[in-house]
Image (cartoon, rainbow, N blue to C red; front, side, top):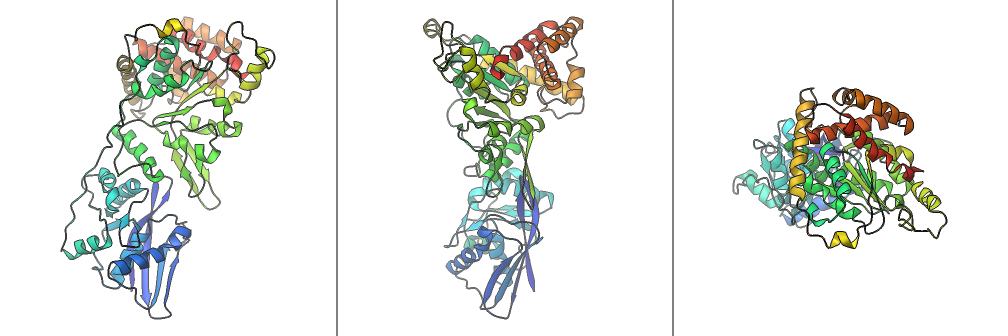
Length: 510
């Protein structure tokens, strides 16, 4: 007789159905796990053996075979421990054989019989609900699974004994409640920054339209401070965005205590990050910083110090909004619709743009060109706003705090985002669509300029040698500027300001 238990295998944030089949037959004493398991799955037999013994059960002196079907799908991770153990328990009569029929099971076992947390519980719960099943998961992951829906039957035991008692009716477990992580302090406020009004304006434009942004200026000008305050003016997450972000964090093991965070991600990898760390990959094809920043901000400080190959690996995700990690036997796709904010010095000395400064490496122009050459032209072409941030003077620092902070800027951003959501929803696009993510064919329609604006962008496209991508990105920024002004039509002044943000830093790409 074969006992079956349902579980899942993860491909990105997709949870594919796996059937755990347990067969116990007379023969030489042996415990085998087959079905393309990795090292962690192959070792599960020892954890299962130890957990069953600690729970007062012993494996029969027979041949035990566990098959993870489909056999050609790679099985990775320790979450197969619990379904294997429950399949063995059902096969030897320790729990009713039909008790597991309506559940999808995942969890790691400790040698004392405790059920410990695993990654990917949220996408597994959503997949189980789609298949009409309940979910059995570790106790610490229960609040995470509860977000999959109020009608989903969720059992979150902390040990094998507790789960066995539940099936026998001697101990009934309550359904876990969904949890939101408590905010860790307040977000940095724009009111903390004195001066830099032009950079603040660019930050507000970037937040309103979801545009990529590059700050270029000397050390100590406040570039990192500005970037850190972008989340404080971004609109709150929609339920769909919260779910998408949390599924990535669940697979990556970023959810603490099963509680979801209501804040947009802000990821700031060090410039020594590898391609696998930034894009994803490595053991188990885990999501990288680009995917963990989905729905939020990816901040790259000291941009030219990143390896050029690592930076260029961002070009495709910036266009498509997803990362594809290819392996010999399977392919994994992660969402990666992030907003890139980067900061850099104009040269290695950092002062090349200061009036009267003579670079010790030679002419200022050569120092700037050599440093900026580490950033490829195609990557810069995907950055909508390029801002020169001047050094802050002592006169700026002794001024009183600015009258406006993040609250006022966030209100204007919210109004612009609402206008975009209504515009694109009327055309059948998701409500979360922004000017930066609008299809190129549609942006030509919604950002069609007036006659004076058309003449301006035609002339500017020739003088600045705008690529087709650069042309469309200029229209996107102009559309955002019009939304901030409450204008239904893109006008010449909007295009002029949008073009200035592309033209100011052209020497960075020299």
